[in-house]
Length: 363
Image (cartoon, rainbow, N blue to C red; front, top):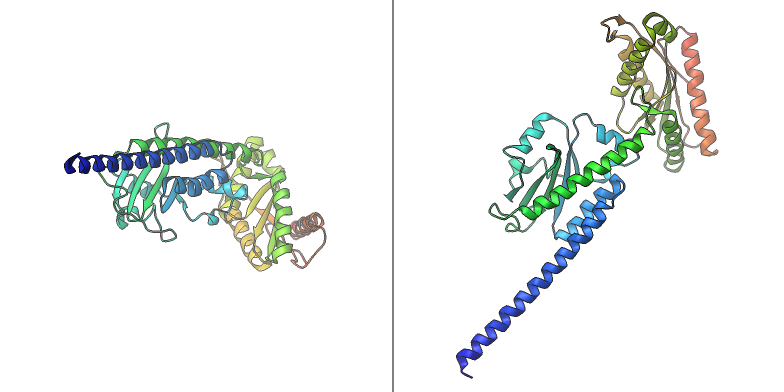
C-alpha cells in the first residue's frame, strides 16, 4: 500500500473517531436534557422548579450562570412565595421585574430569543451584580397564551458559546417547556395559597396566621430575634353596616385591609381573624418598631375617607393593641403564641376603653 493511501486511511480513521466521539457527546447531552425535562415537568412546587432551573439545567447545559426573571408588577408572586415560607433571598438568580419601563426595556425590540455577546446596557437587569457576569448570553422570552411572563437567561464565560447567527430552535423549545412549567407551578401555588386566604379581603385567613405564628415563635426561641403582634379592630363597624349595608361594610373591610398591607413588609403576615378583626405578625421587629408601624396603620385609616362604589364617603378608624415576644421565654411554643395574641387583644381592649382610634402596647 502506497504512503498516500496509508496517510488517507489514517486521516479517515481519525475523522471517524472524532465523529463517533462527537456523537457520543451529543447523546450524553440529549440524555441530560431528557432527564432535566422529566425532573422539571415533575416539579410540584415552586421551590422544586427553581432548584431544577438553577441546578439541573445549569449542569445539563454546561453553562456558567442562569437567571429566571418573572414579571410581577403587583408583587403577587412574591407575596404568595412569602406566605408559603419560600425565602426568595436564598435565590439571587431568581429576579422579579416590577415596573412597565423595565419590561419594555428588556423586551425590546422583539419577543424572540436573542443570542450574542454580553452587553452591560442591554443585559444588566437580567444579570445583576449578585450573579456571575457572562461573556455570551441567550435571552429566552417565556411566553404563555401570547403573554410575556418573564425570561430565562443563559450565560457562558465562553464568548463563542452563543452567537447572533446561531440557530435558536432548540433554545425556543427549551423556553417553551420552562414557560409551561412556570405557569403550572405558580397556578398550583395560587391554589394552595387560596386555602390560606380570606376570600373577601384577599389577605391571609386565621388558619394561616395561627400556623405562621407557631413557626415564628419557634424560630424566635431558637435564634432570639424580635417578634411582635398586633390586634386591629375597626371602630363602630356595626354602624357602617347599618348605614351603608353589608355591601358597604365589605368594601370598607377590603379597603382597610389594603391600607394595613401597604404599611407592611413582604416578610410580615396579615390575617383576618373574622368579622372586623385583623391580626398582624411583624417579623424581626421589637416593640418600639411595632408601635411605629401600628401608628402608621392607624393614621392611614383615619386620615383619608373611604370612598364606596356608590360614591358615598365615610370616615373609618381602627383601634390597635400591640405586644412583643420575650425571646427568652422557653415555654411551649403554642402557649407562648397564645399568650402573645392574648396580650395584644388585652391592649386592643384598652384602646377601645380609652376612646378608640388609638394604639396601645401591652404592659
